[in-house]
Structures are given as C-alpha cells and as structure tokens.
Image (cartoon, rainbow, N blue to C red; front, side):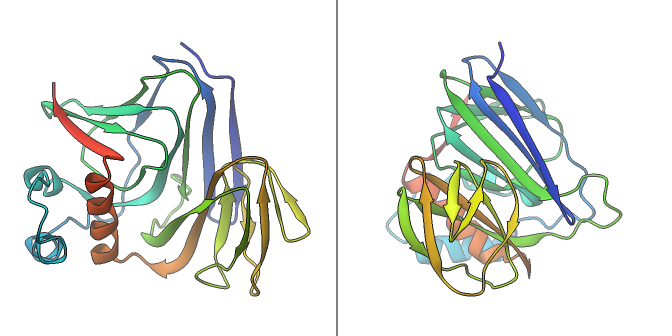
Length: 222
C-alpha cells in the first residue's frame, strides 16, 4: 500500500514529515529517541479524575505507560490505528486526533481508510538536545482571524493556506506573527503551533482525556 506523496520541511531545530493521500493499509513506524522520559504520574491521573468527575471510562492503566514526546503527531484525514509490540491493545484515531505522548518500543501506525493523512512535527531526531516543548493544534474552518498563543512560535498548516499576506504550503514551517491576522485555508484543516515554551504535562493530559471523551482516540484489545 502507498500514499500519494510525502511532504518534508525543516526550520531551525524542527522537522516535519507529512504523509498525504494514504491508501488503506499504508504503514509508517515511530521509534524516535528521547533525551528524557517524563512519564504520566499518579498526580496527573488524579487531576484528570478531578476535572472529569462524571466520566469513568478512561483507560487509566494505559495512561500510566505514556511519557511526553518531543514530537507532535496529528491525524489530519481518515481513520488510523497504532500498535506497539509489547502491548495487547491497539489505539484508533479519527481526524483531528493529536498525540503528545508515546510508549517505549517500536510503534506501527496503519491507515484504516483511503485518503488518510498524518503529520509529525518536532525536534530534529538527530539534534544533540531534544527538549520537550509546548504545542497546540488549532482547527481552521477555511477562513478565520488567528492569534498565536506565543509571538515566537512556529506554525505548520496541514493544508495550503494564506497566513496574512504570506502563502504557506501544506506541511511547511514558518515563524508566527506577533499580531493577529487572517488565515485562509483551501479547505478545513489544522494549524499546529509549536512553541519554545516548556511542555506542560497537566495541560497535555487533560487534552488527551478530552480526546478520549469525544472518541477521537479509542483503545481496543487485539
């Protein structure tokens, strides 16, 4: 199985790998090195339970396996799944699902539908230092007035777009503007904001939990 094409870009210490038009059965693998393994701890799980008191179906044991990842993976189109050899479960992802965590070991990602897309952005795997930094995934409904969270962020669109008066290709990296400006995409997509700020585990855990609740991320036994 194949994909239509792959987009690569690099700016400063960041790299992008973006698979587009993936046919059902297309696979790619994740086994990026990490300088430090910052795991989800009980205090983070307690925060999740306190925040979502009425929701009791979180796969808590699965969360305990995760540690913060220096790269951000966003599933832009289609339905995907991931499998890691040592675990008897697999994860399923719907469009808009985004990952800031990983587990130890080689993970295989498989497109379950035609027309899938998956974008991975983060610290260059060959860099001497691999800090884990804060990142956001903004939904862009074709035309919006956008203000980045930080003035010194990097922005990566998942579709061709205009960012102010600058034309950006899908999967390309650019520096954010200090001032808000219009963003116009060819079709609904996502604008990934990768910052120079330290990763916030509490924020990332709550974001992940929200995706469990909305069924953007699901876990199943194999």
